[in-house]
Structures are given as structure tokens and as C-alpha cells.
Image 1 (spheres, rainbow, N blue to C red):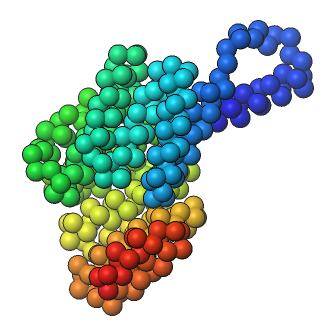
Image 2 (cartoon, rainbow, N blue to C red; image 1 turned 90 degrees about the vertical axis):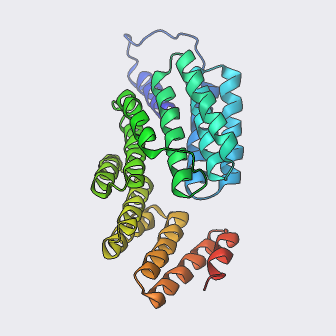
Image 3 (cartoon, helix red, strand yellow; image 1 turned 45 degrees about the horizontal axis):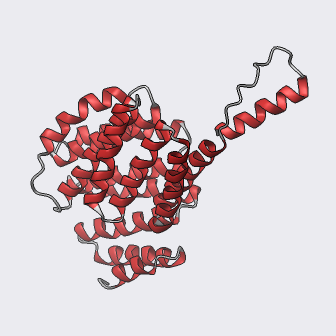
Length: 287
């Protein structure tokens, strides 16, 4: 985005020859702009389940950030690496990377990113708690820790949305279903406003999870249909497969075995089509 804005500004200057344009500063942004582009590419790959590819791209972004010694990019890439490592199941190294990001953010004058790193850490711990990976974590304590970090990022819409999702996970873990869905809906409103279709689809996926745990299976299925509609528009195969798989899980909980199997088969078919046969085999093994 910054690169496009720079090109547009340069084109306007050449076209109109504005004599009041600021003088060149000699500052170079080539590596920093490339690092930003790499971060976006890595996040896109990760959101579609291509974690190995995402890791390679993020490592290159990290190299560029270090070579330019840019504090903002150093922290951003540490957060990105931590997030990808967590998605790959390397929880210990993920938390270590996120801790490094928060400390560097605090020491280098990037307080918003430092808080964002701590929000990612809280989110990771909530996911581990929910999945039974860690039992030594207190959800109420994490909910309390989240408040000052949310306050620090509230002026940045996208970071605020991330904090709202984390709040939703905390409230879900505490069994506060209405509060959990309300928090995620705040993130949803931000993502819809900014035309972030994949993020909005994930919000609906999370809302479905909240409703399912609360026993509201029909409403959970409706939320998953919303997620599928958005992921179709974004051509996000990983999101589509994940939602169809979740529809199978919800239907199974509701006692609709045939509907569950139909949904699982569709999920497996999509996983294979996007080059993730291992995911498909995992589902097919339970049919």
C-alpha cells in the first residue's frame, strides 16, 4: 500500500510539476517496503493453511527487517513468526518469539505493537487451554491481563479487531456466551467495514464455535453458512474446508449423522483440491 501511494505521489508530481513539493530527503524504503509486502504475503499463506510457505516468506521479511534495522518491522516480523509457529504446533517457540516481540516493542518505542504481541500471547494461551494442551492457565487471569492491552491498541481498527477476537475467546472459555459473541461481532463489524472478507468469515466461524459450545446447534450452522458465503467470495479454499468440517462436527453433535458425513466429505474434497491431502485423510478416516 505504501509503495502504491509513493508511486501515485511521484506520478502526480511529474504530471503537474508542483513547485511546492517537498525536497527529497535521500531516505530509501526499498527493503522496508519489500518487507511489508512479504509480511502480507506470509499472512495470506498462513490464513490458507500453507504454513511452511508462510514461514519461508516471513523469515525473508524478518531478514529484510533486520538488515534495515527497522524497529517497527522487527517487532511485526517477530509477531508474525510467533503466530505461524503456533499454527504449526510449535507452541513453546511461538510463545518465546511473541515474548521477544513484546520486549523489543517496549524497548524500541513501539508500545502498540508490544501490546499486540501480548494480545497474541494471551490468545495462544486461551487456545491451548481450550484444547487441553495446557491446564496450568487461568482464563479469568488472562481476561484481566487483556484489558490494558486492548486499551493500548484501540485506536488502530485492525489491531482492535484482533483484541476483540481474543476477548471473545476469553469470554467463551469462561462460559459467557453472549459476551463472547458480542466481542467477536465487534471484530466482525470492523472487518466488514474494511472489506476484509476472509477475516469476517473467520469471525463467523468463531461465532459458530461459541454457539455450538453453548448447545445452539441450529444457530451455529447458520453462522457457518455465513462464513462459507464470505469465503466463497474470497475464494478461500482453506476457510471453506474448515467451515464444512465444522458443519460436520456440529451436525454430529445435533445427532444428524448423514448431514455430518455429507459435510465432512465436502470438506475432504476441498482440502484435496487445495493441495492438503493430509487434512482430507484425517477426515476420511472417521467416515
